[in-house]
Length: 330
Image (cartoon, rainbow, N blue to C red; front, top):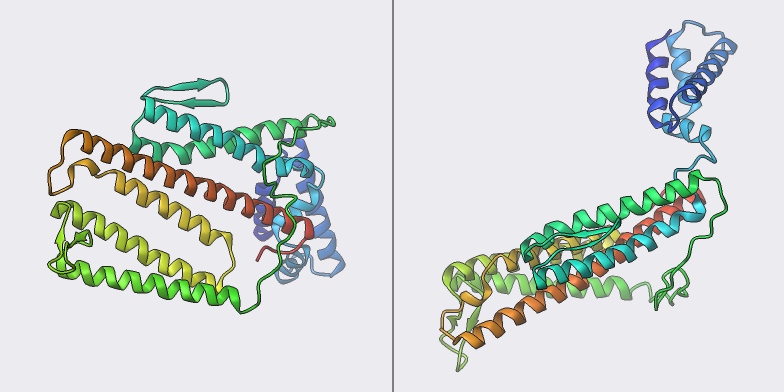
């Protein structure tokens, strides 16, 4: 038996979800079809003919998909529930995680939710893992529903704005959207360059002046350098991301921007923000400043996380639409 044929069959086997006799029957059938085609071409033992027949038979993934039609892991009628249920479950996870940080306590809602006692820094490591766990839990439930072969009508919770039923908005003029991104890119570039110039001169971008002259830093030099470089890097990335939107229309740009924004918030929160001021303040004002900044950053993280979920849902729906239409994704 040709090594090329065996390698091809082995590759197909990797894409087959069934194990055992069913899998072997499919591979045996494919082997017989290929050898028959080789015989019809009069090329038994001819590697070139065999290679041509395999190429015409199709890629290993496509062949496996043809033999598994109607055997979806999650039925098409339930696929959109995957993202809706995951978003709802993660929203609850996110709220309980915030409560856990604020009240320094753990929460358990068996079997779908567990939030350990953690600090603010642990929160940013916990949330991505929580999202993946929620996605896996929902996918597992929908898998069992699909395998049951029963006509199960799952509830479809409504949001105040249902992404599946929002009417398509009027498209802007062909020039307006790129023009907006160009203007945004120039603005972000100007901000980044200005920040670099100020940092190169003063070693920080956190400055104040009473009369418009004699600029002085108002946070400690070490914290000023650290936070300034984080902001300059974030603004530089924002410039590149905005420029990329001029040429690329993909939710992946927004997803990456969301992840970077969450990383920036986490880096900011590593600094004891109530202890970096050069000029001393009394204890009540220090507590107000600390709690105010913490609330601000948590609010920013919440907004970015909601936007991240929305963009991930858009990616999932785009993939499903491409699969249904049979066209490759853009």
